[in-house]
Length: 192
Image 1 (cartoon, rainbow, N blue to C red):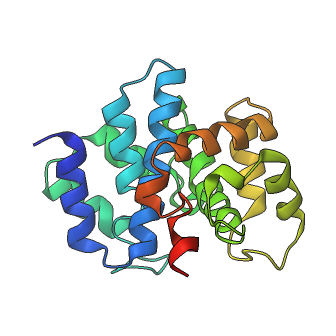
Image 2: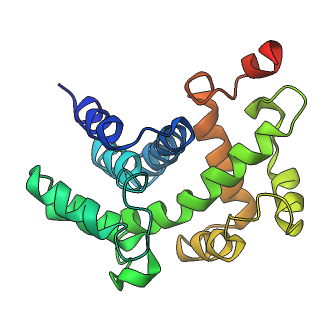
């Protein structure tokens, strides 16, 4: 079984929410793309992206997430590197984001959710309709996808030392590669 398949099994064991599963896949796609860009281990970065919120469905409180997930990952034999990267995506854990992988996870997490929201309001419900400039405009609308922390998106790009619009475009392209799995390939609009 591949690292992805093993991680997917763990994710689906703990995460019943279809939207949270799709979010995990979106972050995984962005992380894999950044791994290629930074000459990182694509499978390692992908697993970190896929599992970063796997415990959130069962343990959504700040007291539990991602701490409970960290304990579960340790019990299941996941490496310190994976567990520490996942812990670092939440500011309140105090785990520093001191590697490109940790910085990428933080930078991609909120943005992947925001890009998904932007695609879902397009007439075709497709990532093909989403452009970085329109995402930037939507970020200014505080009523749109209000649960997404815009400051984290901006901070994440800055910490990665990449221009915000370039970061948005990069993540859109990464997510387009799995648009069908995300339900953002236009097929949702056809059945609506």
